[in-house]
Image (cartoon, rainbow, N blue to C red):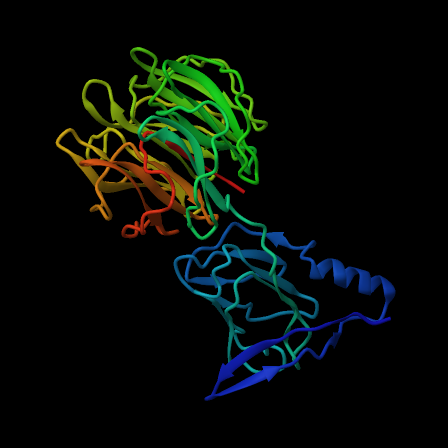
Length: 440
């Protein structure tokens, strides 16, 4: 029995393009050899190297390489000499080969029957390229150059704004589609309240918690992965308001800081099943009216706020939910900010009040939790708004208090952290002091 595995690529050079079809190459004639060939085709026998981010690579037979072309294309030089059966594998680590591809230099040897005067290029996102040396005539032959079409969804696709204050305390919610479109009001479930917080948990669900009705509360409401808000869960931990919340650990959440009659830094962890833990002693400056978001895929950050003065300090949250001490302020000190994640592993703080009036400026958070200096504001200046992720790698700021009243305008955040101009007002109820989180 023979193992026949196809391959296709474009070879460019000498002013022409030769398209090589899917004609197979007989690799072996023994049954055991076929099994070994298919095992090799999966890359099982290779020595996998650390991620390659450079613009050049000199490949070594027997190795597998993750090629990350996020920042630049990569030219790969194959070994100058090779023996029958030598193999190498290259994988599109970040699914960016469609933007920055790879170029194969066969270094004097043939590549699928053509000499190295031809340029071999691969430029499709998600490609896994496995080549084997077949001898001098055909040289290196791809035994696999498949594209991974079905990629698991990364990040939560939808979001939800909820609760807040309009003419009175409110309990309705508004869903955000995976294209950033805010839907009409959904009737209230649970206790109407304002100045609460929300975050994700379980990888695909959310939770609203705490806030103020006629008095302070610690009640929470779970959000399903279809965006359905559940009835009240009895409060755990210190009842308080004007707090913040974010995710950590990839599937858990944390409520933190706020006002319980005075400024506090207490936190409460949320398990991956949505269970809120008892109080954890506060770390960092006690304050309220701050924001929080995730970064680095499994960590979080609290930032800005008010303790009698406007603040710009931040506190990082580890992937185990441990809050770190204060990091010196970067950017304009202010309160009433909102924050959300973008780009899959970064975050953004936006809007707020510096004491002299509302602002629209933003501060980006890198994938290692470093807060950048002010970015000039886009959109209507406001504070006491909310923000959440959508579309897996984008974000949205929405609602809030403007000079002269409340609003329901929104501003989308691209997957590179660029804030867009105002979207037309949604059909949802205008309000401020609301909260938002994403779900899938």
